[in-house]
Length: 393
Image (cartoon, rainbow, N blue to C red):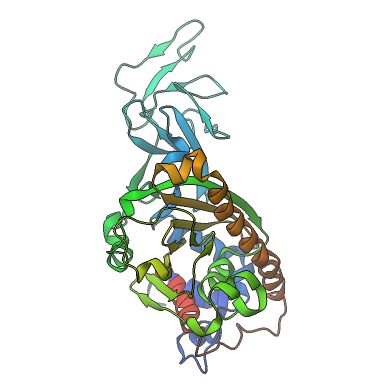
């Protein structure tokens, strides 16, 4: 040996986990390709790579501004394995911080709450809603309280997390290195140029615990092939012959269809986007902006589905419903119609959950190599697997 240094690159790590053929099969023509091998759904090493190289480096949906509408409101969550929280400041600014006291590493916020100050339950260090240290009692000895007018500096103030907003949707970027959010969302804005997104208002959310890998949620979400088998109401609303496979535009998958007629929960009974054309009033569209921001658009709504990875075989879903205008989102006159939309999504999502668990368990079968894919329906699904690999590379 001449003292040469070899670098364990992400590509090398992925090939080691998947095997050379398992890695290469993703990049063959779809007639010969397979999806990600089983290890991508069960390996702890693969899971940690996704957390580090995808979720910490990307813009990740963290919730709706309306969830923390009042000053002092907080929302804790975990992004890329990193506990964080959002907080609504007294100045109206939404900020994000890593959920840890700078003293001994105690978690600060355990559940959504409203606070005037952020106080550590272990030694009562207190921080302002801007993340700056205010006081640390008895730190220098009994009855000696350190107070800070302008915070304690970078070693003592809370660790900030980058936050940006997209029409009432809050996104965080743990690494701080992602492109501006408007760049990330450009394909969505281009596709929805006829929709006045400033009109959307948060109407509520649903939470689901799912016993599957997070990627299976989106593989299922993207393809319409399974609709005839699992979703009778959705099939009646938009039959198989109005559907297509969709396509990728950069890091955003785009799909949609023209439905024959409106129904309760999809276009009927609630206000539509202002100025929407007759043609767009009869269209459903859906998107997935990597890694996990999935949106369904109907003339009366903007509905977000996100999955947060918790383990190789477990994720948590949040489904946020935005309607058009304050009256639709919160007014009593539309209460029944609003509940119909939320119930429709609850029913539809539950139809998929047992399937997701079954697919996760199927990935324990050693003879399964990633499957055979339909050239008509599943080219974008194969594209999703490639995007995962490309983002980690």
